[in-house]
Every structure is written in structure tokens, then in C-alpha cells.
Image (cartoon, rainbow, N blue to C red; front, side, top):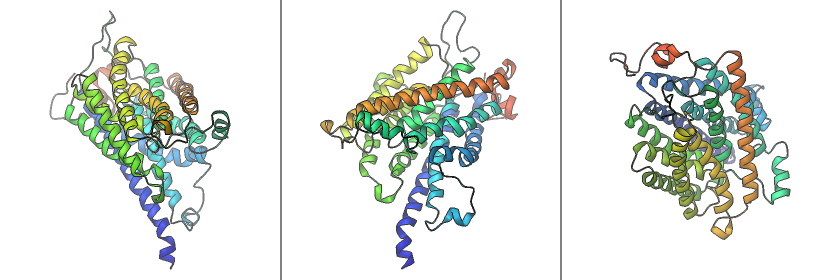
Length: 404
């Protein structure tokens, strides 16, 4: 009898655990996407950063961030933490931690090749302890009465099912603040203003990272239901179609460039997160396609016109495509366009803009604080030598001569 009573709870524990592990695997995707994009002399650093940031943020989010976001802490005996729910709150923490740790993983790709190791780890910890969970508390934590106010003002709360804004836009705009504080890499732009791009070191590794992220993303989106009873095939379908739309748009706009194609898939998935549970599948295709095209176009604008040295293009990929996803939810989620309804375009615009403001203010505060106190930029000598040898004292292929 007890087994029958506890079976639904056990199913939710397993459901959340599988989702958490799939999102954890996405961090390997973040790592290999960066490994394939940066130059040979910075590949080891990319791998070490992602795992180190994950580990530090696990502790920080457990001690501070999760409490800020949801008001729940873990300073209790293990028996109390387990309770009579088989530890479902513990695996929910694991699942939401994987989202929180995506923030420094996103940022890592933007500030690659010139950030000092421990200062960037410190900045990541501060962001996951304060800035990210503060916005998370407003949207998913239902704290500070923001959602109640928005419902009264706009007719609906801010809807972000799987984090187009809460995770991706926040990560992308936070990355932008770090990129601006650090400045461009040595030699990236000429004295005459010319752009001197550094080609990716390994398209196969870049593609591997993209595929790892794509597969894990179905855990990211579908398991955002956070219970087996809430699972929706519509979320899986919309994720699939947004992925395809992003690839096709990036393939066309990016003129067959493999980097754009593999990142276009991710841009489509970023964009559909918010409304994946309410959009019609055709709306998901359009949302993903616009996300993919937006990424390609704004990558060029960012790098060449704005002279912002965003190594992996994380601001257009996560920041802009994520913001588009927040707004798209308020368009294609409407019943008049085949969606399930329950969303407001005004609420989506307000929530998206608030996320951008929180990220910009909080990001500049953290990176400026770290930069002014201990310094966040590598020395010219270390940057020239590369992060692998100057920080970790070994190259990705130590038996071979490292490239420039």
C-alpha cells in the first residue's frame, strides 16, 4: 500500500532527476562549443572553466541563490530534507541548479581567451548568488508580488516556461557586460578599425558541442514541467520545429557557414523556450527561424560594426534570441494565432525588458567590482601565450606545437 501511495512521488523524483542529468550534459555541450571556437592555445581553459564554474556555482546556489529565488534552504538534518516526499525538493534543486549554472557557461563563451581564471570564477559565483536568483525569484519564485502586479496591469503574468528570458536572455546580457568591461582580444581589431576575425580551431568540436546541447535541450524544455503529470508532447514538438527553423534560417542567411548552422539550431531552441508549452507548432517554426536569422545578422553587426569582441556570439545567440523568445511567446501563444492563450504581449514585453535591465545593472556592478578590486583581464604576455599554458600549464596537445 505504501509503495502505491509513494509511486507518483517517486515518479516525479525520477522525472526531475532525468531532466537534471540531461541539462547537466548540456554543460559538456557548452564546453565543446567553446573548445571548437577558440584558438588552440585556449582549449584547455574552456574545458576547465565550465566544470569549475559548475562546481563553485553548485555550492553558492545551494547556500544563497536557491533561498533568494524560492525561499527554501538546506540548513536542516538530512531526515528533514528527505521528508516524506522521497527528496523531491532536492532533485528540484538539482534541476534548477543546472539552469542557474548555465549563466556562467553562457558568459564563458563571450569572455573567452582574455579573462583571468579566478576573477571570472568569482564573478560567476556572485552572479549566481545574487543577480540571477533575484530575477528568478520575480518570475519562477513568484516572490516580491511582481507577477501579481503584472497580472493586474497587463491581464496576465510573465510567461517563461523554460527560460528564454530567465536563463538565456539573462545569460546573454550579463555576458555583454563582462565583454565590455574586458574589451576585445589582442589583435582582434586593427588600429584602422578593421576587423580581424580569428577562425574556429575545430569545426568538429564546435559541431559536437552543438549536438550535445540540442539533445540535452529536450530535457531543458520538456522537463521544465517539473512533474510527470505536467509533461506535454507539445513542448517536445515545438522544440523540434524551432530547432529546424533555426537551422534552415541560419543556413540561408549565413550562406552555408557551418558555425552559423550549428549555432542557428541553438538560437531557435533559445527562442522557443518561453512559449514552447503554449505555441502552435507552426508558430514555433517561425519563432525558431527568426531566432536563427537574428543570430546570424546580429553576430556580424556586433563583431564588425559595434566592435564588440563576443567570441562565441553569446549576446546575439542568448541575449537577443532569448529576448525575442520572451516576446514571441506573447504573439504565437495567443489563441488567435493557434496558441493555447493565457498570455499577454504587454506582459511579455515588460518582463523581457525587466530581465534585460536587471542583467545590465547587476552585470556591470559585479564585473566592475571584480575588475576594480582584483582585475579581470589577463596580462598581455599571458594572453599572447594563451590561457592553457599561462593558467593551466599544459596545452590541449602538449606533444605538438601550439598554434598562435
